[in-house]
Length: 330
Image (cartoon, rainbow, N blue to C red; front, side, top):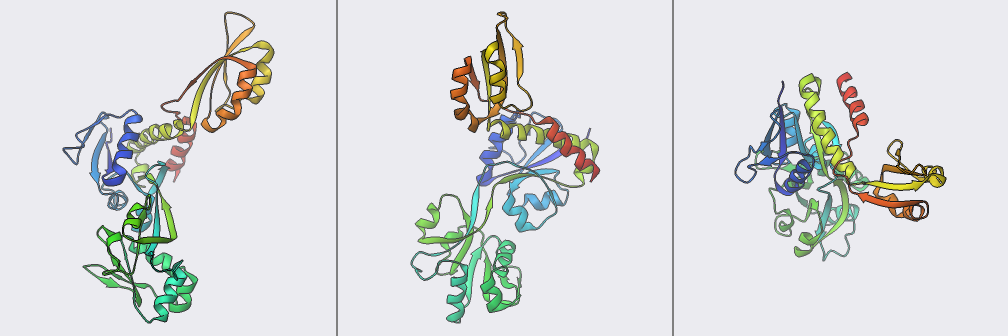
């Protein structure tokens, strides 16, 4: 049977990925000692990598699947299949400037300020491609500089036709670059505390990002690998869906049964079982967590003996099977 190479992230996405995998039923060990931890599925090989690298390595077929941020998928511009939004690791990519710049409230006023003063606008960022695209989509940038790509500067190369707006590749601690190395930054923001400590303020949100499960498109064409990849997808999606659901059990008198069924949502249809007393029925079903408080008054009036569980997983087998079939046909 084919083995699947699974790249998992280090850094700020690592803890959430491990929690998600463990809740899905996987046992992972050796994370603290090795970049190749073990997992209790003999058909999966794990490798820990930086989130920035994972989209490239998955796209090139060096790994079959991986967990990374959607921001890095967009920055690397690779062709991978995004299988699932894992709904953790949420960040915002923002443009930030010194708090003391009261006259700058957005990208347009920033561009106008430096153009009017005939100064080069220096922006420090880890996201050269996303930043360049964002700048070139700004109407003020187009009016001032046309369709010329901003200068992008790394230790190895420089490219771009517009030297008046320069993007400098940052290798971390981006928020510390102004004012000496940069005038502004484009960086991820979680709570905003780091920007605050460095006397910066966000003036525009460029994009929002979270962790995603991605796959190599050729791996999805391999029947053996595709089967295992969709096993992983099923378990992870089950955890994510399970967080949003409640499993409820209740007893209801036969006189109230139909009235309750008309008001009670379910994944498909609730399970109804007769009790020893022929006048009573047992019902169990799964509902959206945010529906519970709305349903509680109805349940109190029509039912008896309510029990509520938070499910560990809710596996959407038909939904994943349909997705797998689509991947097989691509």
